[in-house]
Length: 533
Image 1 (tube, rainbow, N blue to C red):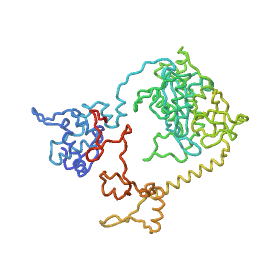
Image 2 (image 1 turned 30 degrees about the vertical axis):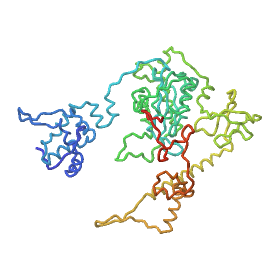
Image 3 (image 1 turned 180 degrees about the vertical axis):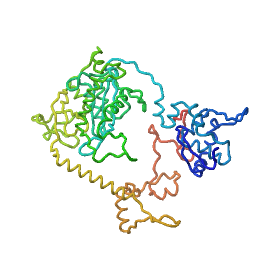
Image 4 (image 1 turned 120 degrees about the vertical axis):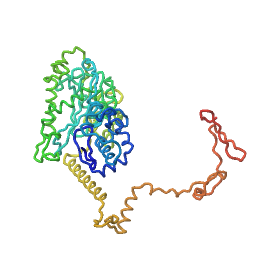
C-alpha cells in the first residue's frame, strides 16, 4: 500500500524513481494545474464497473497528455501523487503500471523524442535509400570537429576536417585539416585536392556533376560559389537539420571517430576516473603535423583496403576502377586560378601593388609599372597574392608582402595581444563582481565598495566619451517655426524659433497643393486600392 504522505516523482520514460519533497511538488503543481487536470485523463487507472480490478486506459490517447509528457517528463508521477495527497482524484498507479502504459501507447520514437529530443527520435525513423549512381555524379561535403586534442603551437586544440566524398563509391576524394575554425579557405583547399588526380592525390577526383552541402556559410560563400560555378558544378543546398539527406559523409564522420580517432592520445570522449572528465596533465598530445600525417594515412587505408558494407566487399578503389564513366579533369594551373578569390583590378605602381592598405612586390614587376592587373588570393593567406594581366588574363606571377615582419616580431605581437586579452578579461570580471555584506539577521542586502566623488566623476566622464547620444547637440541649431496654420503642441512650439511663413510643398506633379475652405491643404482622395488619385 502506497503512503500518500510522501510524494514520489518518477520518470515515465526511464525506470528510475526519485524522492521529491511534498512542498516542492505543491509549488510546481500549483503553477501547472492546467496540465494536472488533463495529464492523466487517458492515463489513470479507473475502477472497472464489472470487477474491483483497475483498467488501464491508453496514456498517449490525449494531445494534452503528450504535451505534458514533453514538458515535464520527470514530474508526471509527482503531479498525480500530489493530487492524491490533497485528496483529489483516484489513488495513483504504481510505477511499473505507469511504465507499462507509456511503453504500450507510445512508440519507441516518441519515447526517445520525449527523453532526448528530435535527434534521438530520428534514430527510430525509416528512411529510403537513394539508388547508387555513377562515380562523380554526386559528392557530399561537410566540416567535422575532431574529438582529439592536438598540440598546436603549444596549445591544446581540436582541429577541423573538411572533406569531399563520392556517393557512388564511398571514396574520400579530398580532405583538408585546419588547426582552428574552418573557413572558405578550408573548403577551397579540400576542393582543390578533390578535383586533382595527380600525385599525391591518387586516382580519385575529377569534376563532379553535383555537390550536396548542409547550408554552411563557408560552402555557400561568394568565393566557394564562384569556384563551383567556374567548374560547372551544381550545388544542392539541403534544408537545415537534415543530416539524413547526406548520409554518405555523415556515415564517414561516425566511422572515422570509431575506427581511428578513438585510439589516438588526447581523445576527448574517453571515459576517465572521477566525477569530472579532466585530461591528465602528463598526457602527451600529438603534434598537428603528426596528426595530419596519420589522418591522411587512414584516408589512404579507407580508399584502398577497407570494404564498406554498401560496396558488398569491394574497396572504394575497386568500385572506382570498375566504373567506366569518363572523368572531367582540370589542369592544376587553371584549378588554382578558379579556387582563388577575385579582388578586382589594380594599377601596378613603382611601389608595387596596393592591396588592403599594404604594398606587395615581386621580382617580375621590373619594367611593368603602369599596367592594369587583376588580383586573386587565397582567403586569409595575406602574405602573398597572385597577379594576372587585367586585359588578357595571363598569369604574371606572385607578389609578396613588402616589409613583412620577422617571426620574432610576429611572436612578440601575438604575446602582447594575448596578454592584453587576458588583462581585459580580468578587468571585465572584476568590474562585474559585486560584493555584499554578510548578515546574521533579516535585513536588506547592503552592497559593498565605496567610491569617492572624484573617482565617480572620472569613471563617468570616461564612459561618456563612448556614448554618442550624450555627445549629440540637438539644441545647437533650433528648428524653424512651422507654418502658422499648423496645430503645433505647446511643448514643441517652445523649441522652435519664429520665422517667416513657410509655403506648403508642391504636389508630386510640381503644382501647389489645393486649399480647402479654411485655407488648409485638402486631403488627397484615394481609390479602392489606397492609391492617391
